[in-house]
Image 1 (cartoon, rainbow, N blue to C red):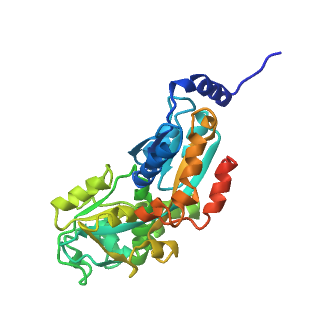
Image 2: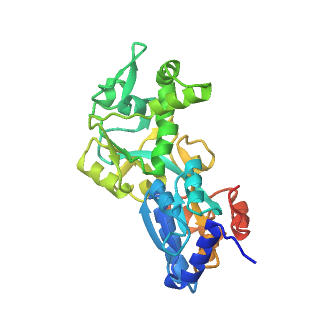
Image 3: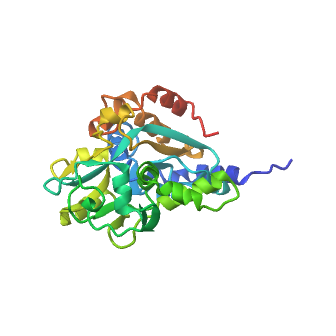
Length: 347
């Protein structure tokens, strides 16, 4: 009798035979999720008879790329992400034999705009302000033109007459995508730029034209006014430390742990806080995730224990250490706990 094994089955067999080569859970990905995962990993090592998991950063896209390299002890077990995994990433995973993925939502975080605590009075922004400051093209007299705004006051007299200097997440970070959709696209629509892009968009369907218009809204200036930060938030903080006029994009938790150095602006008249994010009042918030390779459960020691520990009430609940650090607890945490316990994979 002959037995045919799929690529995935062969990969699972490979990880089973080489498990002895690694007894630590390996995690990589989002710099936003990094501090939460680091807290959990340290507590896990102290409370369980398993080695402390190895947690690395690199950005959501980079972490998911490593996650989707295949199944086996030479690949990571968990990918942290500040956005949902994309369809194309799921396809890349499947092609490499990673077919059973467990999606775990750990809670919510807000994206804030913060600056030097003694710097210019960047106290209140609208998405239109960020768009007019950073977009490659802006609307002037009903037409799209190259953005030549030098100071915030050039387009909004209520903002400081300070040079525009913004430090935003690089394209490999999940935070960048949230920034593009919830700030740049919202500002694009508020200023009328989206309508112009849509009117001139090409495509074989209305959906394709809308996608093209949205993508155009995400384009930022390349004249040095907007600077991509490929590192984590500490690099953004360093840039602001060196530039009194600078404003940076941070996760709420990072800001709340650096209030001695930074001040934060409201967005659409709402101050970012765990409360305003939990209620949905603050407009620039997003869920945070990690993804588990189910094929590694039962093979890499402690992997499922780590996942369950991460989303336990004691850790991710409203009174847990992650909440103290700035994570907004998920009101549906119990459902997540049940899904992890049952090893439910993405459909």
